[in-house]
Length: 419
Image (cartoon, rainbow, N blue to C red; front, side, top):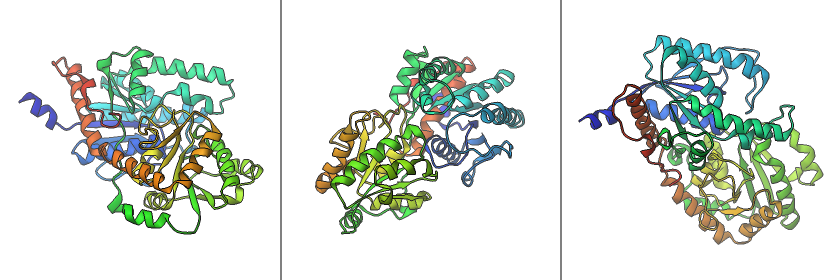
C-alpha cells in the first residue's frame, strides 16, 4: 500500500531556472518541458526564473519572475551582471516563494540554479535536487571570460567536481554525466539518477508531414538543403559547419545551408564571405511549429558541435523530423549510432564531415533509411510525461530519505533516453 501511495503522490515543487524562460535552446527547453509535464500530471509547479522569455509557460505552471530591467542578455554563458545582480535577485525571489507556498522540494537546473537553490535551502531546510544538463569542463572554454583557455577548463573541472555535492540528489541528462558525477564529484551511485530528455511528439500539433509526404517534399528539383537549427554560441561549432559547407559547395552546386536560429548571424558573415558561401547561406528565424516544417523539407541535418556531454535538443528535433543526421561523434548524447541511426565522424574533422554530407546527398536511399531509423528510435525514447514520472520517483525517494523513512534506490529510475 505504501508503494502505491508513493507512486500516486503529487508534489509542490520550486523549479529554479537562471535563464530566460521559455527560450528556444537546450537548457530552457528542458526546464520548460519538465515543468509543464510535471504540472500536467497534477504536481503544484512553481518556476522561479528571470524576467526574460519568449512567451509564457503553459498552464497550470506558476511562474515567478525576478525583475532587473537593465539585464537583457538571452545568450548562454556567464556575465558579471548575471552573477552579481540577476542571480542574487533570483535567490531573493526563490526565498519569497518557498516561504509563501508549502513547497516540498527545490529542483535546481544548472549550476547557477544549484547555487541559488542550496543557498535558500540552508535557511528553509528544503531538500534540493540538482538537474545536470552539461559539464562545464567541456563548455566553459568557449565563453569569452578574459581568461586563458587552460584556466577556463580547469575552473570548469573544479566546478564539476565540487558543486554537485551541494544537492541532496542529482539527475543527469545522460549516462556520461551521471558517471562523471560519480567518478569525479564523488557522489554515491544511489545519489544520481539518469533522466534523459523527452521527445516533442508534435506531428499533429505542427502539421509535420508523414514520411511519404517528406519523401515527396525532398524529391523536388529545387536543390538540396543542409540544415542546422539551434543557437549560434561558439561551442555549437558554427565555424566548423561553415568550413565543411564550403567544401560541400565546391563539389555540389545545388546545395544550400539553412541556419534556423533566433540569434544574429552577423559575427559569422565575414567567415562565410571569406569561404565564398555567404550567398548560399539562408538564416531563418522560426517558432517551433515552423521549425519542424522547415526540418521536414530539408535533406540532411548537421550537428557540428565537437563535444557535448548532454543531449543536444537539436538532434532530437532532427530525429523526430525523420532527417538523416551528420554529427561529430562526441556530441550526440548517445542518441545516434553510426550507419544505423546517423552518420558520425571524428571530432572536428571538417573534411570527414563534408564527405559525409556528400555521401548522403549522393545516396538518397541511404539518407532516407537513416532518417526513418532515427525517427523510429527517437519515438521510442519516451515523452516528457514519461520523464516527469521518473522525476516524481526521485522526489518521492529523496523526501523519504530526508524524513528518515526507508526508501528505494533513486538510481533505479528507468533511463529510457540512453538505454
